Image 1 (tube, one colour):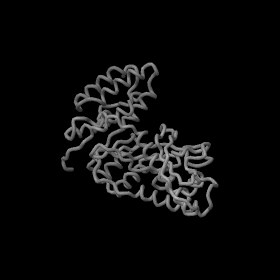
Image 2 (cartoon, helix red, strand yellow):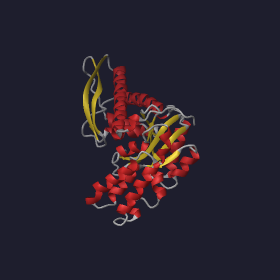
Image 3 (cartoon, rainbow, N blue to C red):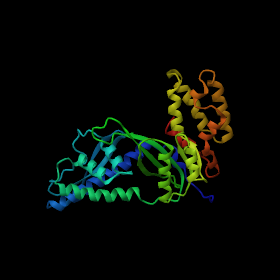
Image 4 (spheres, rainbow, N blue to C red):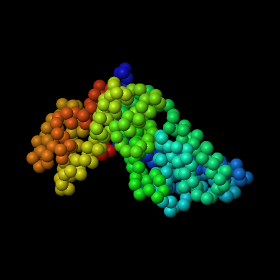
Length: 328
């Protein structure tokens, strides 16, 4: 890979929930636009701009949602109504825009969203137009090169009457400009290295050829799948998952102090300093907690958590500070 200037200064305080909220906002607004267009095909009228309202989701409140309207105020969107829907709108949107979704399932989701407000022909028209948008999203080409690709498994209630959450793999790309791009959602039966391999193959086939760094949880054999598809990339264990696991395995009274000490490892200016911090961390805590409880059994473990130091020649900051900023 050629050495080019990469701007990662925007990575310090990235907010995953904010990125998800923005994506969900865009998809809800597009669905309401499709709904109005289909409505006006069967009902005389003209568009009359938009008005604003906020919408609460599990990722926080979506501000300034653009709601379309017609001139005579006869159109009332069903996309964000009724308020007592059993499945959150955000979960329905994620499900609908996930790779692997079937036309039948999208039709079922829209039926859940629209209820009995429209005729079968209107619902069919909305479904056809929505399918075009879904396929455009999941098949869109990607940049050739990204600073990092972040993979994580999310869990959603995606089926009516189903008490179990379903796993959806979330892929976030960090561009050379420092901008964030939600690369896709992927429905899967369970989180496994094979499921993540399918995600990586899809990203590759859509044009992503040179990610400098791929960050994910420590799923067995996942690093091998990464190296098979992206042999020129580095694989880093996710510090978010490390922090979560660490907090769940120590006593409550130690959480704050041990979190601060772990944070020192990830915010070092270079690999050598990080190793010193690692040894300090292990010396301080290994008499109180076994290595498995600290999730740091060998020096190799901390190195796998800090692969991002290879990017120091590209920029003074390290990606590890980014991943710590959203977890610790």
